[in-house]
Image (cartoon, rainbow, N blue to C red; front, side, top):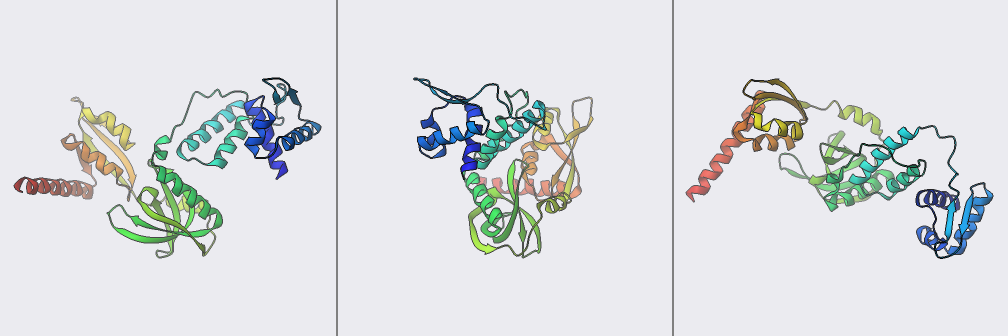
Amino acid sequence: MKIDRLMGIVIYLLNHGRTSAQSLSEEFEVSPRTIVRDLEALDRAGIPIQSFYGVEGGYQIMDSYVFEKQAATASDFDWIVTALKGLASAYANKSLQQTLEKINSLQLKENNTVSLDLGAANEDGKINEQLKLLEGAIEKKCIVQFSYTNSHGEGKEIQAEPVCLQYKWYNWYLIGYYEKYQDYCMFKLIRMDNLQATEIKNTKDHNPSDIKMKENTENTVHIRLCGKASIKAKCREYLNGRVTQEFENGDFEFCFSVPEQETFWYGVVLSFGNKAKILEPQEMKERIIRTCKEIQMEYEESTEE
């Protein structure tokens, strides 16, 4: 639509400064003549467009021009841009980039000393493809299907009604309605294979805010461990908990909470070897003991062979 292109030209010029008609025509995929007409229309509408001739010629918006009636302060815009850049580092989305462009056009410069880089979430190119497919299915309100391997290594075929996407615990998740359970479930994208969108419409409307409230009440495991001084920094870094007690020799007690179905923490604790010992809950202590015995048996059998 022309109005969208006109707004886009204003934002582009505010962000990029003097630009040739040819560059604008390539950016907005129209002819240079159409761009010139658009610029004339903007000038008539009260947006001061300046034209320059010569090798470095082009069009720009007068330096003194700013959007008026801003409800947010410069500090507000800094935080908004920081949050958007963080999301953009985790998800390559054209609409998100356009929004970032618009927000950037409303401030003279970025002054925030805080940055947010979630690039680790974007290291697997497969994830971005999945996000785009799921975002489209959510918008169209269509069911998706995929092969899924749960935290116990069990595989199954899933058909779910996609509701929203969530990034937490260093991973992307799909929150979807699973008709088999008549309930909402969280599916980790990294565990999905053969993801496809169908033409089958959702059986009902879903309210993401209600689902998130419900999801926050899911079962959580509270773990307390005792660790040697040498792993204190790693506990803080990887387990996202707190030191509750410290002893004279440097040993410490550490508490953290994790979703019941999340297993990332388990591998971290195992990697500490004899430098960490789970104190509670009892079932987690027993699980660690079983795992260690299974590992020992595996190595003993390998040695005998």
